[in-house]
Image (cartoon, rainbow, N blue to C red; front, side, top):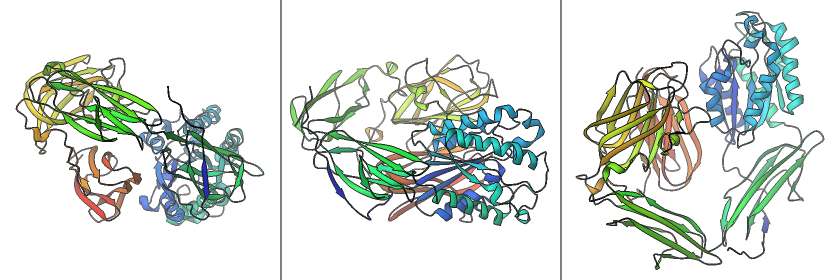
Length: 600
């Protein structure tokens, strides 16, 4: 039983030292007015808003032309991959600007559903772990009715309904309609702004975001939410101007930071009050006393009999702990390569203020008993449907499944962690399966080969046995579906083979590079998406971006803080035209560039 001394919290105010550790992410959801119809993406209002707000914010454009808020509309935003991506972006702020296309007669016949559908979208975004603040947008005026879009419906029916959403769900509002009256010269077709019109929209949105009413928490976080003995973390917060702010009941400044040390788990509650709004947020800081085992793993936990394979034991214990492995003293945090000749259990004990114990077992099995996909080093997919999980295709459970966002060409990839002579692949499909698919192998040097192909699968269970193929990465490329209207479902994918005859050099390496590493993308060339792995020698700020051959920024894949170690990013580029692109990975003081070829 664990016992801990009474909690001691040390607070030290650090005036004017506030600094965000990550940008405030803003997702702009909408139709072609958000997407930037008639202009290059850089002229769209979200991109201009990103420039106006500066480095403290990251604004991402999730607009899709022609979309509606109505689920029964002719092109519901609900069904677009961008809706999924907007939620994956984990925004702190969401701007919803939909309703213009809903005014078309074929869509507005379902007007009784508009309020409910709008409320549902607000609630779906609010359910994200970031608890984003929602701004509902009154659409800009329509200066010339066309394409069935009617200004009278927007003004007299849609905007009042959006305002009812604002009142009911207590969202914020951006009134593009009133603020853009008299700007008809900035709307060449009467519906879509020109570049100056989009700039005006960006100015209106920036004003709404930067001048939120008193009583709004814009940001509250802990630099490190887990502390050990003698460690300190910084709490950082920002609230709207004019707010009355308390932290655990004590008055604090609107925007500030605080150094915190704890001796047991602690909850910090920030409250901001204003005449109309009261907002609250909590940060939990966990404490790990000495004697705590943070983790103890064996990678992989299964080895092939007679193959000479090794497993790496890794462990970490809290500060000031003493550690013992199978009774022998070891470093408090370390790793050890083991090559047992029989199934073996390893026992780690940590002592300190408390005592903790953990065990791992490394099993020795025949090659045919080891599902290599179950113990793989990593997994990637072209897309994953919202609410699904890629790992479900490799969890050993047939009742779970991975689902892609859509049909067409999709893929799953397994990093086996070391080279294997693959001899058998088993695919257990769900209701939607691949009629036409390929199983591809890539060895450690990048050489690619086909393991198997199927042109008429009947779903269910495909059990494929072939002559051995040397393979480090194995990819299931699915091309044609039995149901083009739905995403593929893979209940389980299993990979079997032997490492006998494979050099030990290809096994998981414990030699970590001292500089930035950008691995070759796989696949490359590609027709929809590709995956890129990279190594960060130290924690810090990372930017991964895509440029065209002229050096123009096409897409920012990621921009933020990351821990040291191996990472992998999925690039979904199906909306881009075919051509040559350059992927640039940047950290403070280092950068790497790789050429990518998109073929459709």
